[in-house]
Amino acid sequence: MARTPHPAAAHVADVLISRGHHGVLVTHESPVPTARAVAAAHGVEVGAVVKSLVHLLDDDPVLLLVSGAHNVDLAATGPRIGGTLTHATPEVIRHATGQSVGSVSPVGHPTNLPTYVDEMLGEHDRLWASAGHPDVTFRTSYRELLRITAGLAVDVGP
Image 1 (spheres, rainbow, N blue to C red):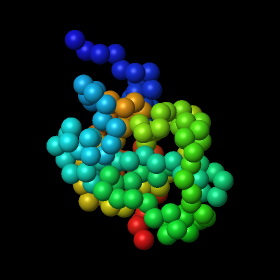
Image 2 (image 1 turned 90 degrees about the vertical axis):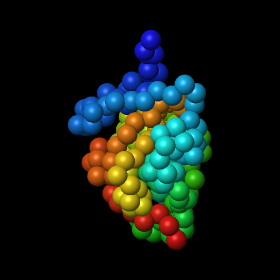
Image 3 (image 1 turned 30 degrees about the horizontal axis):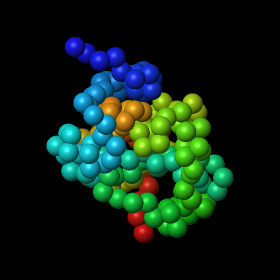
Image 4 (image 1 turned 60 degrees about the vertical axis):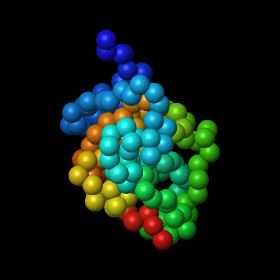
């Protein structure tokens, strides 16, 4: 029996479709709260998992889409994207995305967040990202991720 998707995931599917993506979501039997869990669920390297991280660029929220195998070097990445980069609070994340912390999707937010995409994601043919709920993911590619988010490629390392 098919499960009805969570409203947040259904909204992400609608946004994906509106942006030319197939909109197919994968619902897992239990939450996949980490990049490692998503990688294990799909049988891919952790580097092929997209972490959606909200940070503040100066005082404004931005979305960084980062390979599951990487951490963002705030001091190096901030100047590359034009300011000082700091961590956002859970309240800012929820307000900016309308989604739960830990299951933020690359799309489907109340406003279009400036989005930066880790160049290292381009090393993988297929990527997996959260669909706005802890047990739902979707497949995409690096080129498609840049397109559906209007994201800019950036080096997030040191």
